[in-house]
Structures are given as C-alpha cells and as structure tokens.
Image (tube, rainbow, N blue to C red):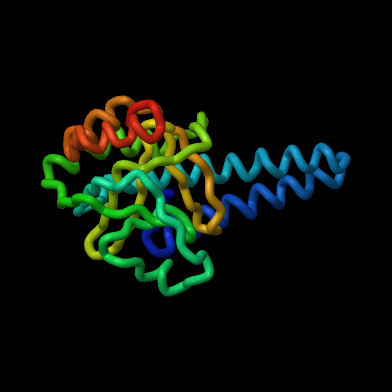
Length: 211
C-alpha cells in the first residue's frame, strides 16, 4: 500500500479544487443528459482529477531532501483495522501497507544524496503516470520507501515487483492501484536494497514464481 503525504496546503488544496471543479462541470452536463451519461462523466472527472494530482505531486518530489529504503517481509500481517493507535503509531519494526495491514521490516538504510538523485527520475515517472495501467490484484511488498522534505514526510510507499503494483492514497483518502512497469525503477531499487537469495527462494517455494 502507498500513502502520498502532500506538503500542507498546496497539492492537497489543488486536488480538491480540481475535483470539485470537475464535479461541478459534470453536474451541469447531467442536467442536459440522462443518468447513465452522468455516471460515466462523473468517473471520467474523478480519473482526470487524480491523474493531474499524480503528475503535480510527482514533480514536487524534486524537493525531497531525505529518503529511506526498506527491505520488507513480503508476507502481509493483518491487524484490527479499528485500532486507531496501531494505524497512527505502528511498531517500529512494522511498515504500514494498508488499513489493518503491515509488513515486517527486515532491513533499512538512509540513501545518500547521490542515490536519491539517481532514484528520483524513475520514481517520479512511476508516481506521475497519467494513463494508469494498473497491476495484478495480488500484492507481496518487498521494498518500502519514505521521502521527506525537511522534517515533513511526503511519501510512504511499498512496492510489489511480482504483481507490478503499489497503492496510492489521495487527499480524500480514496485509494487506487498504480501499475509499476518501470524496469529502471525496479533495477535501481534492487541495486540500492538487494533482495537476499533466501527471500527469493522462500517466495518461490510459497508462490511458485519470482519477486
């Protein structure tokens, strides 16, 4: 799962401005057309707002000053989704995946300035994709990533290379599956945090294919 934590104000506000502007235009459209036309126009407006938000948010990641990469246990752990404290303050050895889900952190390290610069272009291309190709419905996250601008956490994401996906949370707390087809990003992430052979073997035994 992924959370995009936009800096206060700017992108969060822009998202809602876009969203409600599109919905207003859809309402005008619906007044002159039938319910079926309105439903289709509504979803088109929502997707357009999300695409523009992703693009703007990805561009803003150039301002990132710190990044930390994680090797995760691909087996997702399930918790009580109603436990608010767990959601806000999960144990330090757990990486948030989705509401009520975490993965155990196996290893982590802070990237150097040069490593961050190397990572950003392919990460931005993945995050800012306009035509989202989605991914498989499965999710076995092996890598986690956090980015900060100063002291503010702006991005928290985990990626499944087997299913080619991550999950994106928008400012209104809705979520989408985002397809991860960028081989450059995969190669860089695996270079920065190699997946041990024992983890690859454990995954093959359990699921029959590779990470």
